[in-house]
Length: 139
Image (tube, rainbow, N blue to C red; front, side):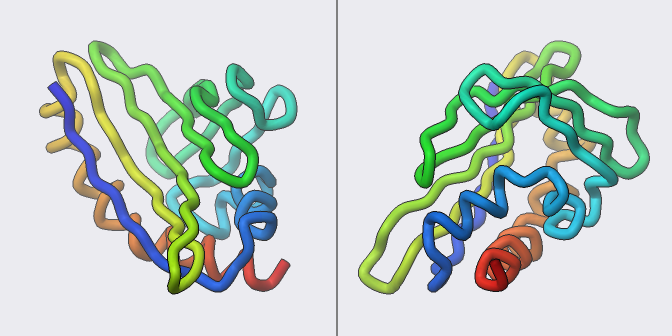
């Protein structure tokens, strides 16, 4: 089973500015107030691991699953009988750079996790994407 939500915003920020925003752990709490802190075990690359602490939950280990500089940065948190993927993508459009963030749940309990925590994550996506875009413009 799969549950997913995505949000896209077109921005005048550059791919370099957005990439710097995504790959600097200190920006994550400013961009997503649900995040208390995040740390990476090494520079962002496919296979790099890290830890994230969200409000109201214990710190979680994660792994970057698909990293393509200036294009894509996805990470995965393993949950009991499910995987939570946070996706980040950039795509050129005639109007500017399309910035997309997504939340995807896969696995036998994806539907349950979608009901329990997915809706809250999805509801915050537009504000998070806006803060990332605005923050990137200030770099």
